[in-house]
Length: 210
Ligand code: DX5
Ligand code: ZN
Image (tube, rainbow, N blue to C red; front, side, top):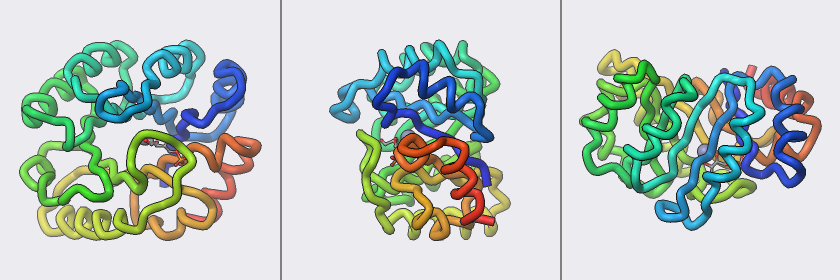
């Protein structure tokens, strides 16, 4: 299982958080971009600062209304994944094509309360589904078990249809919740990792999902 670390909960200097993160076995930096519209928090300036120091492959999570503008902004960082929210998307097919045109793997994120059948038309075309296990907007929240239903649906659909998307879960992933989602391809963890010695926390997560 791959681990993507979010530094949203970094409460010291960004440079210090990133220096420690760059030295870990984290598979990705999970960049939580919030525009202050799709969610009330605005993290654009913080994430620009994070990107100054980042040396890990990028997993960008766009919690934004104007998806196109942020695809333009971040494509030049050559992220591995760029994910937008189905709840914000107007021309989903067009957005999928645009992200792919940059050679970036495209993901769709969905919130715990969103009806997952909304994703149905796009599952054949995307590389990743980001299953939110918290309501987007901040770190340090508790894992919401509704996500488990979404995961079950996505695994079944992928098996039935031979779809290629990976499944990633985001929110409240800690030592005591990661075993609930051992059937996914990747997890995001923020506050659990950031609030300890990063590599030690990452190793504890890896231990729990062996
Ligand atoms: C929430 C973000 C998550 C969050 C994860 O809106 O998308 O990535 O930062 O942080 P934890 O692991 O603390 O829930
Ligand atoms: Zn996220």
